[in-house]
Length: 116
Image (cartoon, rainbow, N blue to C red; front, side, top):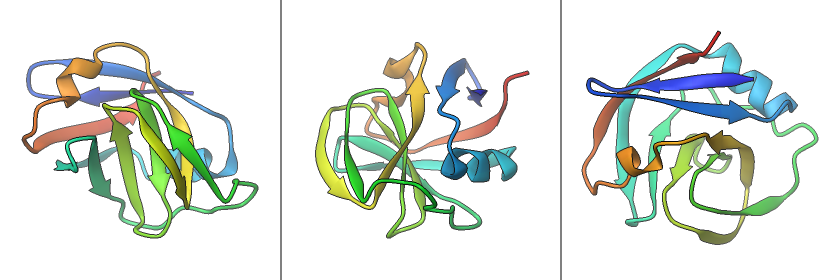
């Protein structure tokens, strides 16, 4: 599955895994919200509804460019730096190119939609 992050100045494409959690995320698209910087490592945004954890591991590690869901908080995460193992973290997919757009320490407004 392909999605795109639409900013005012750029569109970034990403590829999602085919899992129950990811399908649940795609059902909520399109979404528009502010991505907040968190711990100078990731951008986060809270989803309107929590996603299923069906079939998901208890946790995972993340690498720069990963898109994930942090189940305990109900938020989507885009990592722009590598991150160690976290319980409740579910890998959703990966940014295809253009990760640099996410690396500023500032919040940013984005729309996430299916990339048909």
